[in-house]
Length: 155
Image (cartoon, rainbow, N blue to C red):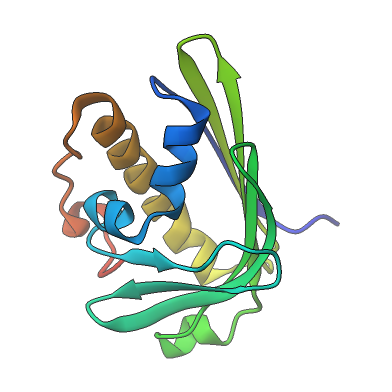
């Protein structure tokens, strides 16, 4: 039996290079990821961390970094006790140009059956990527309160 996964596809009016930069820039991610920032040098084998309010919430290792086409890393929650027990999952961003727009496919996979983390990311990723799309296209992210997502924090 295959493990559960989360897939999200969106089209953004931007270039693949601008989208790559938005996904990998600590300063930029804070603007659409509810104040969280990604930290890495984006080299295969390097560490990945998601930092929110000065705390590491998630960490992992860069598996692929093919700018501006594909980015993949492991993703392990380290803050909340019940989620910390779950195994690391895998995040893959596939970036494809289509004329004036860029197709972004996010696949987050490797969850166990009944994963609480899968439930959380299924609420978080759509809000994060909607913010990203709005920020790139209109210059401002959406105003989505975390309480509307039924989660305390993203990650």
